Structures are given as structure tokens and as C-alpha cells.
Length: 372
Image (cartoon, rainbow, N blue to C red; front, side, top):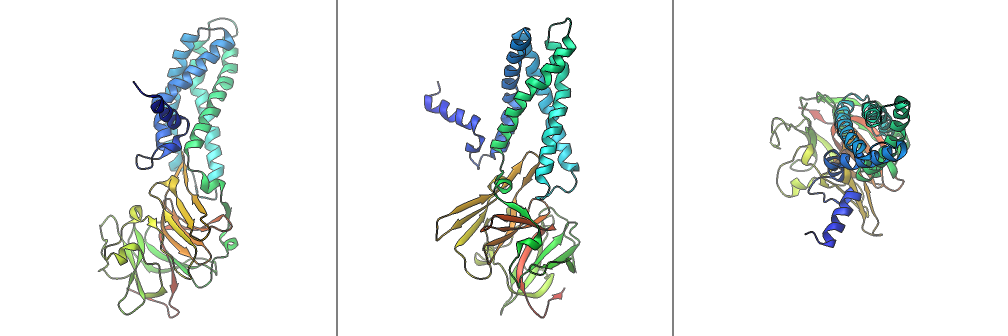
């Protein structure tokens, strides 16, 4: 028999999914699984008891019917979610709040339509059955839907939405002398933008890197300077022995941990952990987490302040990868599949810089670089 402590732990995980350990999945994963497997039975129980109390119909029959209704609507909603996330246009950090609430509203209407026949069936035959069903469905389902929205909100990673203000790239005022190199979304070109002189990106090289986890990285040259390389994950070209995309292109560049360890670079999926820094020293140290809800964490070694910004919602699971720390306590990183963002820790702001992947920020050589 489970001890009192065991029951308390189980209750805590059910009520607060974020208590789940990261190495066994994310809180949102657990919340979704609990909802789809057992949560619908609890919601159906609540709705059935409310229906029976409001309209004097069989509580037992109402509970059984509305449990079935919730399982049908939940699995239909899961299918709707999988379809919606693939067709939402321009889903970025700039539009995520709008589309999230659109999805909440649409899902409510869809589940109302699905569950209405079940409410009608659960009510006693007789005069006013249709009218009662039209009243009961939005009222009772509205109560349970609010509880469900709260459940998923508690389990989601929302700190990037609630703690950061979204601004334009011009408003971010990034430090002078740094250039951003990244792969175009289709992986056909390497693009460059000067961070302090914002304008249209310049194509500096043509490549073939269409893989989901393909990215750029830098390789130190013997005698000084850096070469720009491309990691092709699908071809398992993690070698630093290939020809550089741009030779001797930077004076200063972020050194990833594999350089000191004399290892090999990894693709975007595995490129998390300690964030390399370039430029003047800072009291801040940054780390990116494996899961989307862990996002990016910062620790101020002087003050002891700790911050974390992550985003994992039912419609968006955006991991933070390929990050670089810049002077002024800025971080440039890849967010999700193809967003390159800048985060200003001091002012709690975030900006969408470009659509692409595999970013690298460097101090470029004034004389330029040669494409191979």
C-alpha cells in the first residue's frame, strides 16, 4: 500500500506537472499524457455530476456518456493540434501569443461541436431537450475547459513569453563590430548581417545543407584566424578536415567546447550546454538546456542572480541551440527550427533577427574572406 509520502508526491506531480524530472521528459509531455489517458475520465466525472445536478437527469448515465465525450474530443483535439502546427503561417516569437490564443478559442469551439451530441444524449427525452443541451454544453464544458487551459499553462514553459518583451532588431542596439553568419532556411546559401548596422542579409557563399540539424561552426587556423565550416548532419560530415566555406574570415570567434577537448563538432540537436562567449569578460554565464522548456539559463557570478527563459507550448516546442554570448550580456541563438534571435538579459528583451539556422557570430576580418 502506498505511504502518505507517496500519495503526496503523486498528488504534487498531478497538480503541478513541472515537478516531473527533466530526464524523464518535460512537464508538458507528462501533462498531455495524463490528460489523454486518465484526465478525460476525471473531467467527464465532473461534467456528468454537474449535468445531473443542473438538469435532474441520471448522474451515473451522464458521467459515463460525458467520459466518452471527453475522450473523443481530446483525441480529436490532439489531431487538430498536429495539423494546425504545420499550417500556421509565420509562427515566430513575434506572433506566438496571438496564434496561441487563436488555437485556444478554435479548440474550444471544435470540442463544443464534438461534445454537443453527447450532452443531448445524456439529457432525459422530453420537452426542451435540445434547448437544455444548447445551454448545458457551453456552460459545463466551459468550466472544464478553463480548468484544462490552466492545467496546460502550468505544465508549459512560458518564461520566454511572460518575462521578455519582444522588440525589433533595430531596437535591440546590438554591439558594434560583430557579424552574424547563418544558413538560409533552405540550406542553399550562407548569409551575413552586420549586427550594429541592420539591413538586408548578404549572400556570401553557396552550400548544400538542407538537413534539420545542419549548422555553421568555426575552426581555428594554425597561426591565428578562423575558417567558417558547415556541419551536414544527414551526411554525418562532422569532420573539421573538409574545405571551409569561408577561409580566414574572422579575427575573433566563439570557441565551442569540442575545440578544447580536441573532439568533433555536433549538429544542432546536440549543440547545447555552456554558451561560448566572445568579446569583453562578463559576470554572466549562460547555459542552454536539452528540452525546450529549459531554454536558456543565465547565472550572474557576482550577484548570484539566476534567470531562465524557455518556451514550450502545445503549439510550439522551441529549443535554444547554437548560442553565442556577446558583450553587453546579449545572447544570439537559434530558437526552434529556423528563428535566429537576440536576447538582452539586462533589459529582458528578445528580438527576431532572421529566419534561418546554424548561426555563428564573429568579429570579421576587415579584409574579408575567401569563399572556397
